[in-house]
Image (cartoon, rainbow, N blue to C red):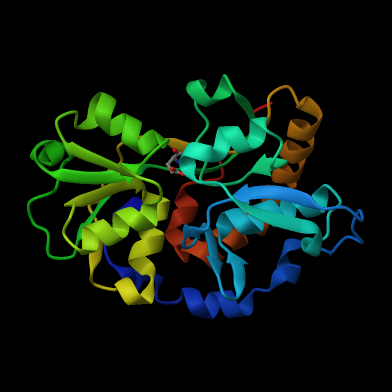
Length: 274
Ligand code: GLU
């Protein structure tokens, strides 16, 4: 079983237990701190990856960002989390509003014109999320006559428009949680983005049985950490930290913690580029 083949939320039922058995100390020894803050861009509305709740921030990207920040010498309380919606990521980096972005941020040629990427540190694939009782959407071609939601500034929306289903009635919203609400209220028939993101929504207890992943692998999405173009020193430091994340076993622990799929290990950590 792979991540994209997960069609029901039940597979994630053990997540809460695992979360309770892992604590912040699993990310390594807390450094003294630099006595200064570091702003990091993450998603605020993507369960399992980057989520803000009343209890704070959680998700795979949040933990990866915290680990990297620690390796750069920042203690956890020196991190200032900033929301980095899909369409704002390059702008946040270029303006210097954030030092780096860890926000389900796929490395691609278009973005490399504006920013640089450390990594990749995670591989996932574009898929579709539909309502639990949907029977008519099984292939990407089935979208051509349907209402589809994705997010402005994402590779998912661009892939649909340019190649996957150009005739789909594509609605682009500001965030995936808005698409999810539209899917639930039947304003759209499907939501498309990375399987890791879709699986996070489907696994939330309040969504059990309401949504299912179709189980397609429509693209390769290699997540990188976005940094200012030309900041080769920071990119190299982050790449070193990501190498340690994998080699000290934390990467695997975090994948289990946030996706709870032992089978996901069949998809190994992608090789970090120089
Ligand atoms: N990974 C894709 C991207 O970077 C889709 C997810 C997102 O919008 O964050 O565009």
